[in-house]
Image (cartoon, rainbow, N blue to C red; front, side, top):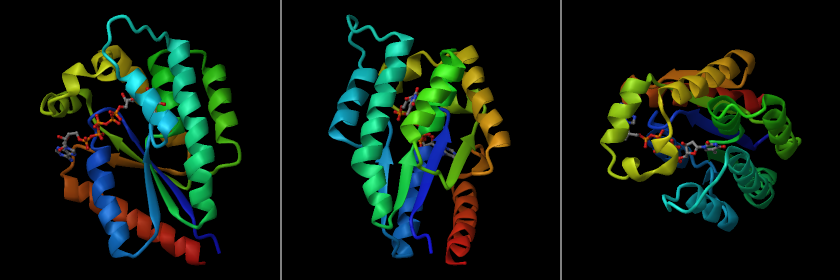
Length: 214
Ligand code: T5A
């Protein structure tokens, strides 16, 4: 019987991933399930250093689109080897706050980098890892902007700053395309109240657990 699960949370900035993941962790604790929570970019010493670089507002720091793709990829290669694979091998549930689909959506869609290059890099880094479920929180840009404006550090964030309307649209299109293509996706309307979204996640997750027992 399979007892490990790889669960990813995806969505545009401000969609409520962190909020939902926090509640989801409480739920797993109530169920006495062993899990690991990791965020991207981050989760390892290298990943957190890369996160700091990517989010830096230093005016003399230039990161072109290809360099950005490679930085996200380097962080991911490390987190897979150092954290994700060992946790899954130990039978744990791994919760990822963003993963491979963020690169497909942001670097492939948003930045418009060569899709074959982005796909191939992502698939190679993923290797034989299988994502069991992706909770995708879908949110119109106007609502997301409203939410982000209420968070104090959003304006200083390099990545958030460049998320203009066209960029947003391209990123969301990739997510919606993936949602149609990949059976692992659960599309969630993130305009709904926090407990409503969480109830949908819990209901789906308990079904996943049932499937694992079979
Ligand atoms: N990136 C990342 C790439 O370009 N390529 C990659 O490969 C990867 C991995 C990460 C950035 O990096 C990019 C994508 C991102 O731009 P980040 O700081 O990790 O940056 O930012 P996000 O992951 O986008 O996290 P955010 O904190 O911005 O958004 P969340 O986590 O989706 O939203 P959350 O939970 O913090 O909520 C935002 C606000 O909305 C409220 C919350 O209270 C909070 O104030 N809220 C709700 N309000 C009403 N109703 C609800 N249902 C609500 N849910 C949350």
